[in-house]
Length: 79
Image 1 (tube, rainbow, N blue to C red):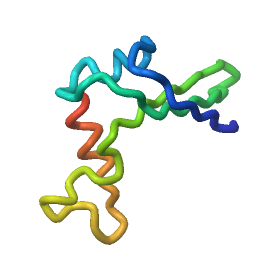
Image 2 (image 1 turned 45 degrees about the vertical axis):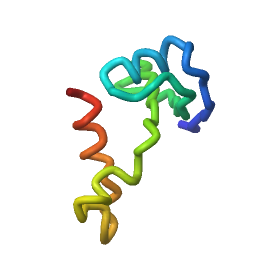
Image 3 (image 1 turned 90 degrees about the vertical axis):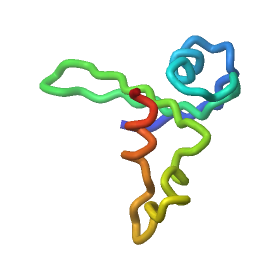
Image 4 (image 1 turned 60 degrees about the vertical axis):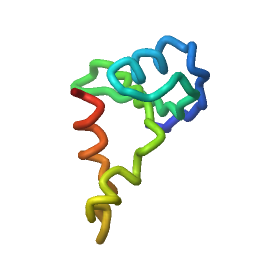
């Protein structure tokens, strides 16, 4: 499906939930939404992109040769 993007302000519930488990201050985040169908059942996916996405791990040598550090960033967010 097509992707929809928006920059949501800090007091939006989706952004508040995304930032709740981080040490980041309240701030606007980019959000991506897409709708899919799996075996005929609808599935909506919403993703919140934290400020360090795509640069996580660059200080410790990760993020080179095509590794964007996305898995590292996701793991940090889930703690």
